[in-house]
Image (cartoon, rainbow, N blue to C red; front, side, top):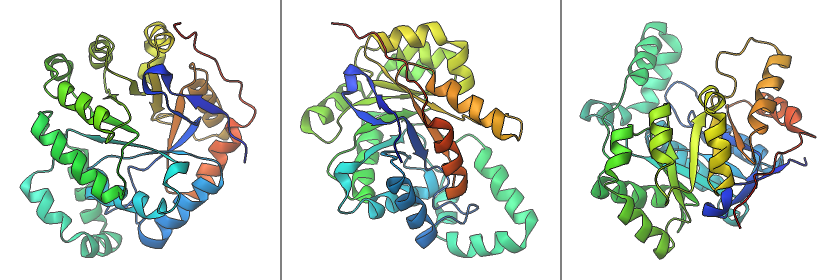
Length: 290
């Protein structure tokens, strides 16, 4: 399948498929997409022309990264891996992760348990953007991903104040120089975080929900012209359950200059539908600084 490409800005120097696979549910207790099912999905994505895989160290308590690493064994140079860190589990959550397999089986039979797990997952996690925590998280991610480099590392949902403090920016720069990261950026949840991130010259790319990006279009277009890459997530959030609405949402995401639209799914059929929407979409080129 021929997909349009996205140049993720001069600051990162990365080029990927314009549609990326969001892997937040791979290996999770509730999704059931693990083992051979996850392997089939990831191989299907690769065969369909997807080259960007978005994950985080907390997704599936690290299982998402492990599954991606296994799927890309022998094909690492075909893919752009994006991962994140900065959120951390509580002691109780780390203990629950040890019983993930039986919990998954019980949740299938007990709706109340499934609801309780879903509610717990929706609660905010503690944050830690210190150099020590992030460097340790990156080393752990490299091991799970079975790779020597992360193509794009993102701070995971920091506040604007955490971005302004920039505790780990110098350390991240050193990891880029060492080749462990090709570039780094920030995954933002609100306008204040985006504004703070755009004031940091070293930020190579942002990840932003589509609705937030639409409300900040002028600023993000200007950032693209300055070499900042953009990934748009939650493309279908709040959309009516029609194919036409989903197609319009994906095309709106791809209407941003050279943005990557992240499609988070564990269904090959849903992924194929999104890819069909992307076919023939005309990309908007950012005006690059000379």
